[in-house]
Length: 315
Ligand code: GLN
Image 1: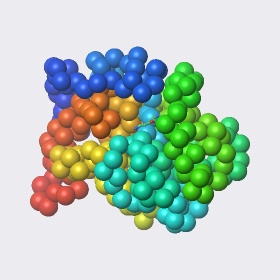
Image 2 (image 1 turned 120 degrees about the horizontal axis):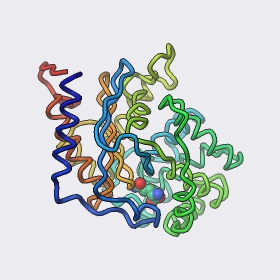
Image 3 (image 1 turned 90 degrees about the vertical axis):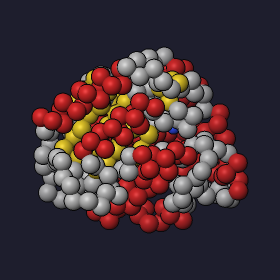
């Protein structure tokens, strides 16, 4: 563990020296204010310890990382029926593609692109009040991270609502195909708030642990979601978690992961640890440039890779 702490410091120093830092998202005004100098990394291990380096206590907008939460909740609500409304294939298109949805007649490719996440959010809302669904999401995030100071950033939520034309178009299109049960504006209301969930890197790493532990959270006896469901979520993260950058990420890092345009990435080392990185500069697919580089370095040095076939254990 001492060497892991040193490695995180080393990665932090390495990224500080990087000049190619990607582009901070201008999709919504609140994200455009972020500095591309920010960098944080945290590793939560199975014994409940969390190691970190950089701006690891600074909250950021988790954005599309929240799509893991709504997927887990939607599966909890309707189980495998979800798969009649959303697919399980990588999209090969940008996360907010409209043309693909028309091609596939209103069945989004997977739950991690925006159209697919609007469907999982619709399932979570389930005819209830948006306020209740948002409250349930917040409670779920707090429980997973074992932290009460996770919050919804009102400024980001407002900013999302002001720049939501594309997501609104996707939601209406889903509705036209009969793949949205609730009113468009109510689904968007929840979606904007889930994107605005604010967490720091330490909390986000800890929140990922249930995906390393067969659905259990440290200290709990029974899984909160079943081990077979965890395997499937991890499989979807591996194939679809970084959108059109998922193949390259699997090649370079080899871990299931999910990104968001706030600059966060959560990566899962099954049976070992959950990793969160945050750096706001993005590549053209909307994935954090330094986040990917940091994960590549960490995974290589720790020999953390689900495709590894040697028995070498450096932890
Ligand atoms: N709020 C963003 C959107 O809806 C989330 C996208 C992302 O993080 N990739 O487009």
